[in-house]
Image (tube, rainbow, N blue to C red; front, side, top):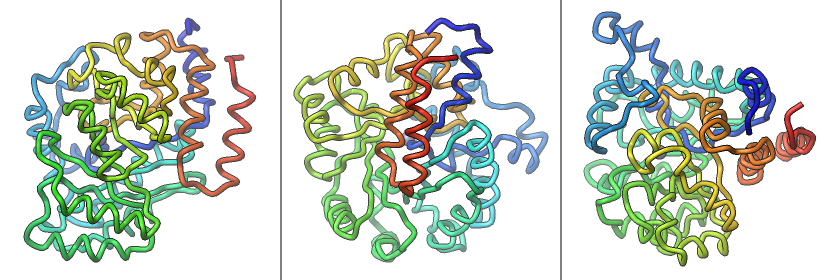
Length: 332
Ligand SMILES: [Zn+2]
C-alpha cells in the first residue's frame, strides 16, 4: 500500500480495530512515571527509537521491571494506568481490547487480585469493550499462588488466563491442570509461545494446554506441520510486529512471517504488546505493515476483521464493526 502518509493515517484511523495482545504493566503511559519522578524518568527509554534492537530478552526484562515496579504498587495505580491506556485506544478507534495483568504481583502488594481486576474494568470508557486476563508465568506455582489461582478460577469477570514469561522454562503440570479447569469453567485461555521458543512450543500450547489463542506464535513458520495444525484447529495468533522486530524475533517488518501465516490459512491479529518499552501505538503497527511490508488496504482491513471475529465482544459491537470494515476494502 503506497498512499500519501496523511491518507494512510486517516485510513488506519477510520478502521475499527481491536487490540488482543497487550500487557497493562507494559502499556504504562510514560507520563505517569514522569509525574512520579520527573528527574529519574526525564526521558523515555532508548528502546523507543525506531531502529533500536534489544541484545537479549534479559535486557528487555531488566528494563521493563525497572520501569513498572515503582508504579504498580496498588489496585488504584492499576486503575489510573488503565484509564489512560483505554482512552488512548479509544482515540485510535479501537473498540475491543484484551489486556492482561501480572497476577503474581499480589505477592508484593496489599491489594487482592480481584481488586486489581475490578480496578481495571472500572477504567473502561464507553464504546470500548474490555476483557481482562490474569497473566501467570511458567514457574509461579509456589508460595501463595496455588491458592490465588484457585480463587481466580471463580472470579466471574475474569476473561481468562494468559501464560507469560520465559519460554525456555518447561511447561509444568500445574499449568495443564489449571488451563483445563479454566476452559471447563468457560474461560478464554491463552499462552505466549513461539516468540523466543521454537515451533515445538507452539505445538505444546495447542496440544497440551488446549489453547486456541497463541500470543506471538511466529516461530511456527519453522515447521510446516505446526502451521498446518494452527490452520486446521482454527488457532489465532495475536502478533505484535514492532515488538518482534525490536526483540530480534524477526529481522524487519518486511521479513515478518505474518503474510506467510495468513496465506497458510492461520488467523492472525495485530497488537502492540508492551508500548511502554517499544514506544509504539496500534496505529504505528498498521502503518508500519503498509509502509515497510507493502500491506494493501484490503489486507489491513482483513487484519482488523480477524480481531472482531475472534474476540468475545457483545454481538452488536461485532456486527457494527464488521459492517464498517466491509465498506472499507480500499482507502477512499
Ligand atoms: Zn506479550
